[in-house]
Image (cartoon, rainbow, N blue to C red):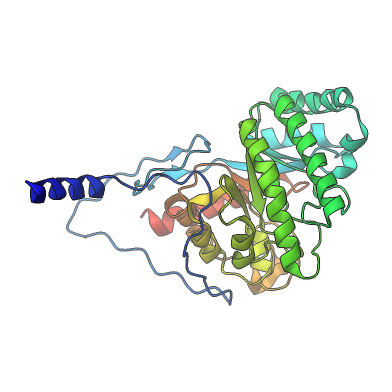
Length: 357
């Protein structure tokens, strides 16, 4: 009887699968080589003797939920989105151009210079509600909001303690105001620092302290904070991103592909490293290894051979490895939306030719 009991117990344990991650859990993910990107392996070829199933193309309704493990992703298409600056004098006309070009989703970037810090809550809500109403009037949806990042005294959550506390309080106030005025938005892009202390480990520790204070507030408001990989500040590398958010429940990642490329990282391996912790993305092109965060159009001729060439593999990795089901967000504020949409359609066509033929 004892043997039977232990056999049944063992079977019960095996049948219980691992729970879905609620946020990043870096674990023992191997560290990819940050040198020049390797050529990805060709996808497995189908059996020529088997009839080829018809692929039905369908758009993904953007969600914060992960795709199912092992899901057949053939035919799945991301909706593209594009960012714009809330403080731009052409904000209203940009929204019209974005909608006319066929976009349905936007990211609204809120800079410290917009002045919300100097406004009362009532004044700030009036401003933000006006901007939100303009988005809705054009039939657009706010997928993500980029929290302020451009002031070393007010948006530096990895700074010296007095600056850190001030920055956390400032950003949480902006977060609360935005949640009230942009109720449909669930994703908030967060820069982990504005500059770096010496030694860097001090900034990492300060950023971790800030995230542990901010994320529970965001969660209570029903939104996610997505920490971005930067160029000149924290989290430029996979290792530093890991050190910054490891073990912090419900910390998500904003993957900025141009930042990773200009810092000399293989963008596909960076995505694989992030895995199902991917919260949102910033898509634009840069020159590989240049350190220049130029935010160029995809394949801009000025980038020469340093432009990102792995777009088909980026899409496949996002669908399969990251199981991302959000918006393919271009951080190309001010660029012609028609040109951006054309570049997206091209990489999707290239993706289909490689993976779905």
